[in-house]
Image 1 (cartoon, rainbow, N blue to C red):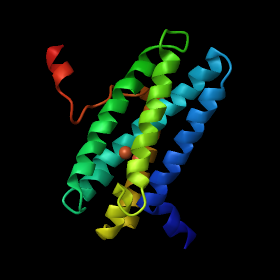
Image 2: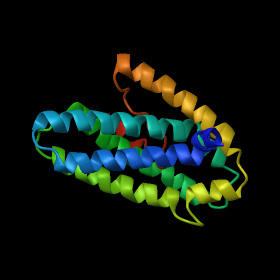
Image 3: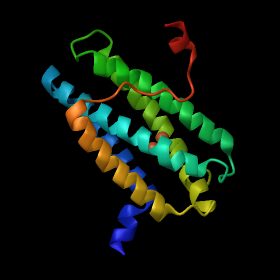
Image 4: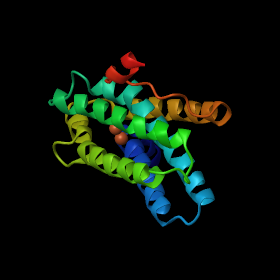
Length: 173
Ligand SMILES: [Fe+2]
Ligand SMILES: [Fe+2]
């Protein structure tokens, strides 16, 4: 029984959300650049893996199955917005100008995004449940992918984020 709950897709994603909220709160209270740097690395890693498992596994399963496709499209765009700030934080250090501001804007963006996913009745997770998706199977697949990515990034570091919806700036490069 407990095992089923742990591998449920929504439980897994919500646990990730709580973890990153906690890390953002810790960053806000952090004293000194070393501590900030360590927390920022954790935040960027958590967000990178979380967005990847959602984009590779959970969102595609929702696509075409849930009621509100617009909400799903917005989720992809919100992820891409967050990736810009994650890449910025990855490329700079806590002593850099605007670093704390970038982190705090990222935190606000994620707060909004999480609300859209978890909103009772009409959020993405509620819609996925209502659509009858196999949440245990999705949870298992996401968990396996998550372990794999965690292992991979330990040796390679975080990859350059892959934009799914934004092309204008890349095209201008
Ligand atoms: Fe999420
Ligand atoms: Fe998301």
